[in-house]
Length: 322
Image (tube, rainbow, N blue to C red; front, side, top):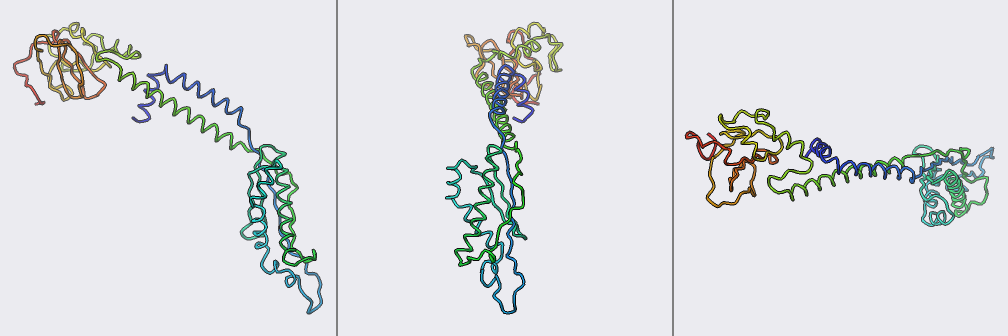
């Protein structure tokens, strides 16, 4: 079943599909009102080396007193990021009501550290960013002190470049929620409609039309002159054939070799029970007072009363097509 078949089924079963679609729209609207947008705050910190100044020849240089300078600013910055991203810091932030979603990244070519915090409100995003920047700069200082550097004049420092107001509203979470709910609603609508349609078809008795096939039955029970097909044998009365049940407006077949089928005229044994059961596409199983002709389409069935069929022509062959 492709997309076009599903669309036709939804249109035919609009009594089922329409309420499901309306329910999906209502749920989507409720989701839109309940899901709040996020706020994303961004901050930037630049690591700066100490000023060497004018020193006398042979004097000790800052990089000799502070090994982190020799290792590089990015090395110190990455070490501080590891401490900031520790789980203990995350637990502390959660306890204090800060946002739990944030990232800290070091630039590839420059010692520029970028902080990005996603909060449920503008205030939460800003406060979390400030706390994260403070935690990072404190970590930079602590790492140097732990390495024996006590003089701040030779320490690497972190300088915040932004003013602390880079907070933007983000609706990506709302869009993702709406897409998810809408997609789930469409899938549920299609699945329910297909399931109910299959259930109705299984419980339908042979020859009994579906509730929503009245239009098809009306068209199918019209005079034979309105039906498509050229295999109708002369002398067969249209009214007599229409005494049977015709489903889904398929051509009425009373002759031979229509749609690749050879019609066999058989009279049932005396006392046979009327009805057609377990008939597959391409088979003809006369039973009782009816003859069933199953077209290549599994949904196209013509049931013609045996009394309305003309006598079997002498030239007609039984069995396969010729």
